[in-house]
Length: 104
Image (cartoon, rainbow, N blue to C red; front, side):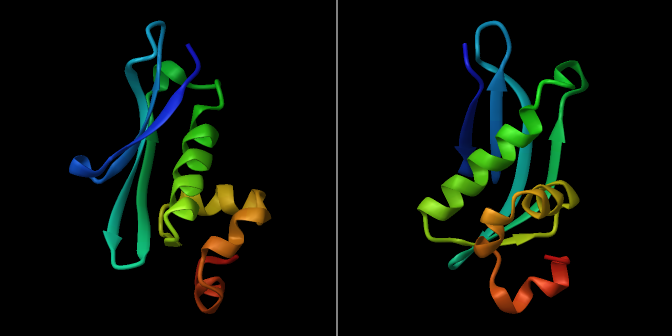
């Protein structure tokens, strides 16, 4: 089964589900949601799933959802910030006036 990114608002995080049955949490990206903004604060993947590109899929899925919801992104998490840096087509999610603060 293909990995899937799911928003878990009750836990304030996006999770990537993988594994043989597609239901095991392989990683997560924690966030703080406020009016019109989502601040990513920590991303983690389980070492058992290392090397499969799941962190990138998680970042893309979470950022695509933020875009669809019209949320500005504040990438305090170094992983999310680095991912945006490598994928400049996502930099527009970060408010222009705050990009320099995040090195974008």
